[in-house]
Amino acid sequence: MAKGFAAVMKQAQALQGKLSKLQEDLELERVEGSAGGGMVTVVANGKQDILEVKIDPEVVNPEDIEMLEDLIVAAVNQARQRAQELAEEEMQKVTGGLVPQLLGDIKIPGLT
Image (cartoon, rainbow, N blue to C red):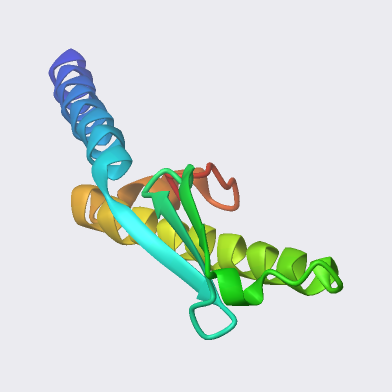
């Protein structure tokens, strides 16, 4: 029984190493979200950190700031969604679906 436990612990440590590497790799990945036909573009990394916001000067209208705000929110949400999807895809590759099975309904950003 001790041998079986040691093997499980060894696998867990290997998985932990892979997950740490994945987190580092996700920080280097870039995804993009946009709104208004590309008038507002947001770049995020694979950990959902927003890195860049680009706004086309044509969309800046002092009389309609609310539209610009809406476009920024939409672009940020799209970039974050793409980052989350990227993280989930990469997690599947590393774990073969094992971590989501173990966690069940528990959601951990960047891990599930």
